[in-house]
Length: 340
Ligand code: TXA
Ligand code: MG
Image (cartoon, rainbow, N blue to C red; front, side, top):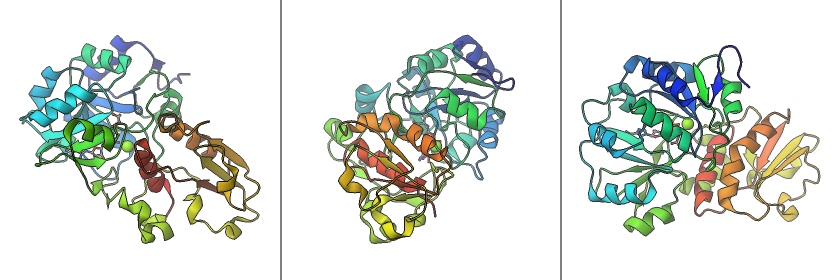
């Protein structure tokens, strides 16, 4: 699979050497592939922004394999944070915590906090242990595009711009980690992701869910947007992200008469003909699950979106997911993927 510019490997020691010497390594995690650099090396971190073509600097998640590094990066680890770490690490949970001096400003965008996560993937954990450094890693996609869930996705989109890909196979969770701000009185979900609000509340009791600042740096409120009439009329008002090249819209927002004569694709959770309204022929259909299991839907989501995007369609229509559990993270990604 490798090309001459960018080897794809399962050789952890080699990947660790590249990272230690300031290189960029994309690596598989259970959520999506990350584009990793030594978090303590500002030049390496700057190369991450450059490779992704991010138009501005946003704070990155720092990945660790053990709590020793956590205490070197983080100033204060509250009892609530300990409970969450015990319950969900390693796993798709990122905690935003007070940072120590050692963390470069470029990683935190100058914020007094740092986002930390321990990924639940054997190869990623091996890599972090071998390199014995905290690794800053945003999702390994060019700015604004679909997040990668296989090594091939990374190779297709960033192959010429990074040093190595550590192939961890297809990502099992398939959506990014849940980001939780831990500095206030009550934990606050900044981004829906692989750990659901319901799971967090089982451990901690009630948590807040707030307007988030996503990777575009634009403010948006991911849960209320779905219900808001403004968003329903104009998904383009939302911050655009995770986007295919083909225009994408929510099935429920589209007047079926407006798509007559167009090549339209459909992304849906289950085979359920009634929901496709009066559009009788789709040029391509991706059905994420047989039975509506949201975990499977999440695992298949970004790859299905890529396949539809590769079909040269005029439009992709997507069904909304149930607004519960992982469905919230999926709806959030769907809304951000809608074209302006
Ligand atoms: O699953 C994931 O989280 C993947 C894998 C690679 O670990 N990473 C990922 O990174 O999605 P990225 O850069 O695409 O998203 C990082 C998110 C952004 O929404 C960013 O605003 C937020 O984390 N974030 C990072 N540091 C923060 C901080 N100090 N305060 C608030 N939000 C922060
Ligand atoms: Mg991202």
